[in-house]
Length: 195
Image (cartoon, rainbow, N blue to C red; front, side, top):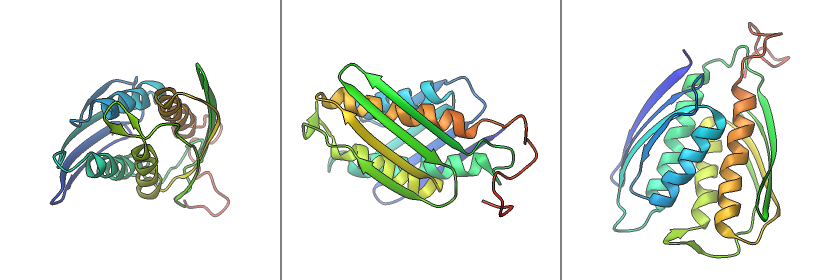
């Protein structure tokens, strides 16, 4: 079973994240930030990675620390579940439409964190959620998960649709990348012999 749990406690947040890579997309996410919970649910459902998040943050300040620290913990949990990455496909991509939004994601579970973010949200808020936090989440996820992550918005006029298409596109790409390659299930997917 490729699974891992992380507990992260700071003066700003207390986060517990558990992932099961070979899951069915079950989720139980409670961060205190409703829209963010909805996005995490999409990430789990469309990646087929079982995901549980419990977060208590300084929401009286704003949502920033909770969202960013959840990204950190989730990245660490994914990296822990992947271990030495033996047998994984490693790469994944997805071109995902959601109504007006069209988002492209390509990623590499390379242990070389890098985020290319070409997504402009047309509004500063989705309800009470700051749209700039979508980028903060993916920056933290890529950095602490060791993921090279490219996300491009090709079209979109509705911030909710853009954000949701972004999470779903990353989820579908992750689903591909974490799969076991049946032709090379015993090999590290790199000519270097390590990732």
